[in-house]
Length: 299
Image (cartoon, rainbow, N blue to C red):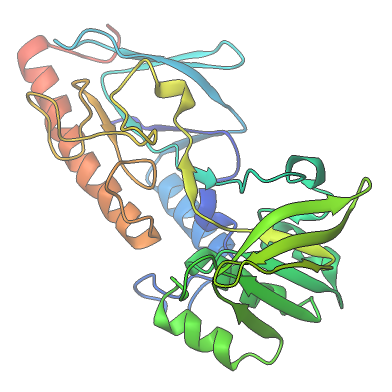
């Protein structure tokens, strides 16, 4: 099989911009997301995979369900055809959707500590979200910031126990539970954040130099709305077609894996496993295409 990977950004997606990954098998001391992504890229290239980066897919023509080719069109108008597609568009960080958020994105409000954390050396920062991403990025920020406060809307952190223990033991971090952001304030640049204690209703104005938001993920599936079945949140539904494997969409020959697939666990290790399972199903699909329809790649 000839394989082409089309990627709108850098290889590795969310994992590639994660400061450290501690739960990927084979790396007892953990590994940086960038290094893991680069190792995966090298391995793929060793097996002849062609990588097309900085290209955004605009649309997909699924072709007939009875077989044939599927056509991928990029924003530049280039078309690529194949008898089978694997959709792995991943996810993006969710917004708070509170007053002032849009006004200060890049001017005090951020979604990537690895990218923007170094700008806040010796300053106080705020992290919104107490899941794995929020606590991981908060720990990373302690390399630069003088202090990091993590806000969690619930009554406990949702991060793994390993991350919770690290955060609790770190002298530059503190955790505020049952707390939500109501407004970002400033004049051209963030100057304060209005937060509310959900147990008492008391509001307070904080003055961090920067805020990093990690409250969940939304799938990058806008270009697929008319192509494959999506669930109410926009995640790709698999295993629902009449002939489908667990990783196949409702369109025969189009598969999905990773964070954008409905029911996925949003972990690097499981995303890799899903990709392997999808590729085994794709191989079976390709063999079926050749056996039943005589597909040879130039049709």
